[in-house]
Structure formats: C-alpha cells, structure tokens
Length: 159
Figure 1: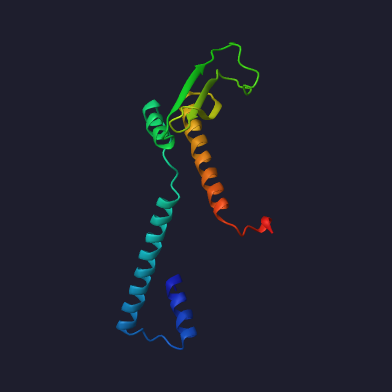
Figure 2 (figure 1 turned 90 degrees about the horizontal axis):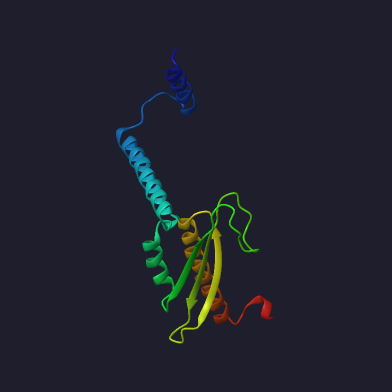
C-alpha cells in the first residue's frame, strides 16, 4: 500500500467513512485556499516595500542631490585623502587602509552661519559620502522627535 493510500485510509477512518466530499464544498475550500495565498503574497509584497532600505549613495552626484534635499539652506563638504604612511589627525580611527576624511557643514537660513559641522572617516569616498547622508538623516529624525516631544505637554517625566 502506498503512503497516499495509507493516509486516505486513516483519514477516512477518522472522518467516519470514505465518501468523497460534494463538489461544491471542494470548490469552496479551493477558493478559500487561493484567497489566503493571494492575501499572503500581498502582505509579503507590502512588507518588503515598506522595510526596503534606501539606496546607498554611489557617487558625488547622488550625494549632491540627496544633501541638497536634506539641507535646504545649503551645505559644504571637503574630502581629504590620506595615503599610506601619511600623518593623520589624532582623532582619526585606527585603520589598516588609507583613510578618507570628510568634513561637512550645514548652513542656517539666510544668515549663512554654520548650523552643524561634522567630520566622518571611511576607507573609501563612496562610504564617506554615505555616512554623511546617513548623519544628516539621523539629525532630521532627531529633530522630528524633539518637535513631537515639544508638542506634547503630558509627558510622563514632566509630572
């Protein structure tokens, strides 16, 4: 006896007989299974799109575009490349490869004063540009959190 035959024999004994299900019940069951599969696929597609990480900055043109959007009042960056054996500043991280230093500044509205000045280190220029963009996105997220906290008067630590 095959495995399928043994399973059918067990299933029929549990169900109280081996009479096949009526045709309309089978159609309903298949329709419910198809609807569940379609819903699962839709949920998976939605979650994949929702949690997709933004694309990395690959070159200076993308960095110019993204930072232009993130810093509406202007920004400036300076890249310094250190060769093998070159003296690096004391605050540089230890590295086995030559480092790239990227110093960037964000300007305030019309006054032209510096609002934010940062220095990042990376092994390559594209990585330094990506870190700069991620730094600015983090600043924006923190600013949004601070604004939301300022708008709430009933915070638990104010009691």
